[in-house]
Length: 285
Image (cartoon, rainbow, N blue to C red; front, side, top):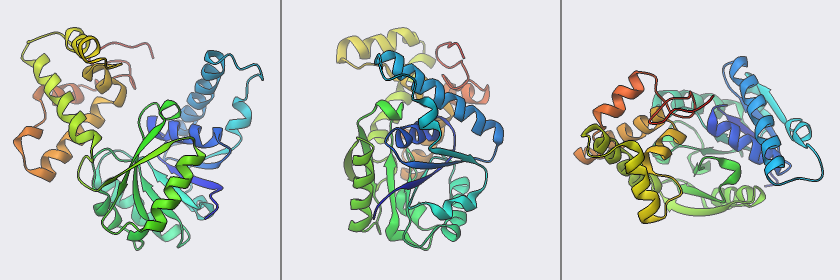
């Protein structure tokens, strides 16, 4: 399959990064969300990100942001996805929301279109069950910030075909990214480990064993991590962290995935991290 047009569902942090990465690698992108306000914010964020990259890399060819932006169609109209050979879905980590999206796009997209779920925890096999094309459903767990991360955790569902896997690998290669293929399981590899780590770090903060700065400093200085677990939580979004750990708790029925009460309290208070300026740390938005 020759992939020219990619639909991206969801214009949040991940959708912005995926759309930018695709457009920078010459793909036509249809970026969808339910709100014009969200789409306009996404347009401005992509433009700012590209300009920042140009400045950081000292791009001598000038500002290419407008050319890259011109490859992205910003819309609330799902029927535009009828022109897409590949879909990457980035909706919030709530099963009922994702289920509704897949049922909708399954009736709109051509029969050979591949759907990739950019999810951090929801099983790919469950997502496939919401469609009439389970062999063409695959997981693509992109990491944030998408344009700067060279590897994508790619997940094979129970029904995912070898042809779908090869199409996904081809698209990722066109985006300059390596595919690490794993089997389907709630949280996959990365988040079965990461969410436990972050959740336990929040418990440490809640129990006043150490401050957020001290917890993160131990991970950075002792283990060589670029970011500590609480800084990572702020980057991902505390609401997304909570959704993910709740999915793991529900899926495995194991108390080790019990969400920290402090994490739940912070999400209830609207403290989501970098996306709105306040989490374990304070940011300028």
